[in-house]
Image (cartoon, rainbow, N blue to C red; front, side):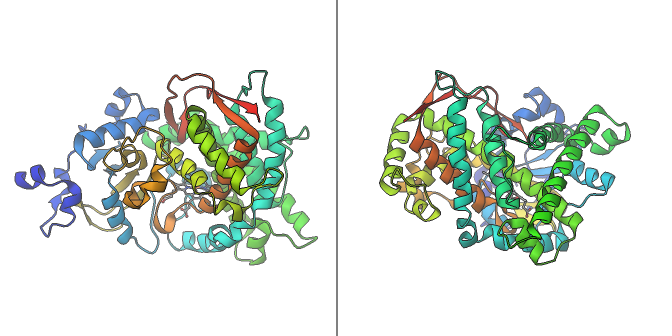
Length: 482
Ligand code: HEM
């Protein structure tokens, strides 16, 4: 056994035809009775620092290690080869770790679950109902004009928000408005007026509530949501209130949109899904609440990080501007088909998502005993797939901590595709991926065409986990109209 442990890396072990080692022999941090490794996390900066902690642990224990997170046992994976093995063994209905507080809220208020929470056949039915419209490139490309309409308003809006130095008081909040406006237009054919003076209060309420719900989620997961609910803790109350407001807003959007769509043919996602008559109204509320959340936080967050990297890499920005100008005449709006001939633009986005992934990890619940990296991982274990442990690893990305979009152009054949999967993998991959990519690509075209993105200081911008990876301070970027 000691020979095996010392002389083979876990990924080599995948190919070795020998008996797997028991789970208990996996390396990992100290596991205290009852609380597992929670204290280690607290000592190292808490849950908000979990991406850094996992990165450090992968360095210490290797590409696979075990960790008891209080209420569940996990195996942590930071290796593309293992991820590929994972995908090959994927079942018909892959399962992510249950997000208990979300599920408990649904049961408490008798609301339906959406794709993020459901499992098994129910998940499959919902996924099928939404997938055709959201995952087919041809269908998604048709949304480009709607996105452009919002972007045209956003350019004027954000220009007005800049002070004399080009700085925007809260750029993240403004990008949230942009993504809310876009996702609601795509989902319901509804403009909420967030970029005009006529904004509806509920739009603000939704954005604020999503952030609050994400903030309370982490602590509720690792410290028993059941106990929080039982004692009606402040965290449980705030989490519940945030979800109440999310559902209130979503129901209003859906009811209004359905009322309007009964008067004519429309092409928004809600109308398309309703035309199949596969889902009840309650199910629609459940599924659209999650689509709306997915659409608002993630794309705004990704765009924010992209702007930071461009502000600090002037050559990259110049190169990008040239590509955009050569493919998209300045008096025209970019289209989905123009984007097909903009590989550098796509590389800039990919590289930003590698260096500062919006979602730092995903998970799968093992449905049977599985041989991973030479260890037998028992059924029911949660496998955490740590994206940043792979994307920050110099072994897979030389000079991993540097922003180098070129690597996706010239070195792309030498990059293991499983080393960078910001939208997840397999059948449960992000359903909004194509829409998000189109949104980010069009938004970047518009922004770079219209503004020079400057950096207002060179101090590091640290990221913390609050559901997503968010910056710890106001982003030091400013915008100068071209
Ligand atoms: C799932 C990332 C945008 C809706 C996921 C997952 C990731 C992710 C990592 C988990 C996948 C897995 O477990 O393999 C992102 C990023 C986005 C983004 C980085 C933007 C840059 C969106 C948008 C929507 C959305 C725009 C809605 C239109 C969802 C849903 C799921 C999901 C519903 C659950 C899918 C399922 O389990 O079937 N996303 N996402 N996401 N995302 Fe996104």
